[in-house]
Length: 298
Ligand code: G1P
Image (cartoon, rainbow, N blue to C red; front, side, top):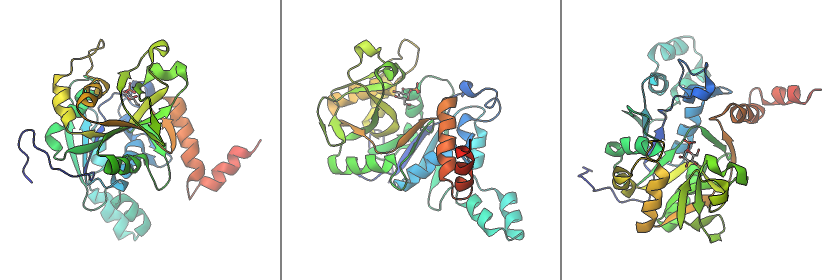
C-alpha cells in the first residue's frame, strides 16, 4: 500500500521493528573500537541477533536498523554470506550452513538508515519514519537483553496492544537509587501486568520519581509519535528523548506500561553483559551442562 504523508496502514499486527544501533559503545572500549557493541557475542550470537529473533518471533517482517558510521558489520551480519555459504555447502557442513542462513528468516527484510548525529533515542527513532508504513511499530534496544524462553517481551507487548489498542512501554521495578538511569512511568492503577500511563519522565532524581517502574528497551508505539518527535525540543543534554514524546502522546492517545515477564540484562555495561553470558552459557544446548559443572566447582 502506498503511503502518503501522515497516512499509515491500519492494523493491530506488528510488521516493523526499529533497532536504534548508532551508539558508540564507549563503555566497552577497547573492544568496541572497530566492532559495534551490538555485534559483541553473548556466547555465540551477537547482541543484535537476539533482538532480531525477538522481533521476528513477535511477527515482524521488516527490520529497520538506525545505524551510524562504524556500524557496517551489522549490515554484513544480516546479509547473505556467499563465500561462507558455498564453502560450507561444498564441505557438506549442513548444520553450520543452516545456522548461517537462518540469521534472517525468509520473508524478513532488513533496512538501514543512518543517524548522522548523536541526537538521542527520540531522534534515532525519528530517522526511521520514512521506513515505517503502519499505524503501530515496535522498538527494541538490543542493549536490553531479556530472556523469557518462547514468549519474548515484544510478543507480550503485541498481545497487550491487540487487546487494548494502546501504545505500550515495557517496565520493570528497579531499586529507588537506580531510577535516574531510566525513563520512569507514572501509572497509578495497575490491573494485572498493565497500567495506563498518566505521565513519564526521563531519568528523574529518586526524590522526584513518580514510581520505581523503569522503562526497559521495548516499545510498541503509535506512528503519531513521529509527528510529536518532530516537535520535541532537545533536553538539557541536547538529546531528543522518546520519553518526552511519549509524555505528549499520552495526552492524545492511550499509552500503557506493561510489566513484562522475563529475566533482563543490561548489556550496555560490563556487569550486565557478563551476567547475560553466564545465563545464556548455562542454558546453551551444546556447552551448557559442562559450563554449569565448571561454574559449580570449588
Ligand atoms: C534509554 C531511554 C530510557 C530507557 C532506557 C532503557 O536510555 O532514554 O528512557 O529507560 O533507554 O534502557 P539510555 O539507556 O539510552 O540512556
